[in-house]
Image 1 (cartoon, rainbow, N blue to C red):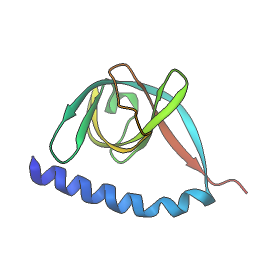
Image 2: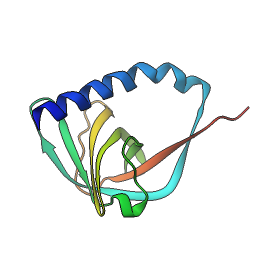
Image 3: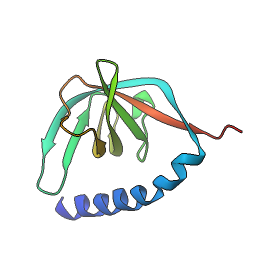
Length: 114
């Protein structure tokens, strides 16, 4: 388990290096939605459990935004999928915020508009 988390953290670090590409593309939100079911506090990183999974169209590697009361409070990276549940690592979180059960999670889709 610990080695898996370390590999996932490496993936997150590599993904974070690609943030310079974000300026050249626009971000659109998909229609599908899930909710935070649980946040598991681990030593290297918190693991977020969602109440939707593969059957809802979620796929490993997707980036999602976390919203509460209409405000975006963070981003997640989906790392493991089950038919009706998913787990994710936190990529970004607005300072002084924490994820809570019931927060809305929406998959981000990317399109290049010229």
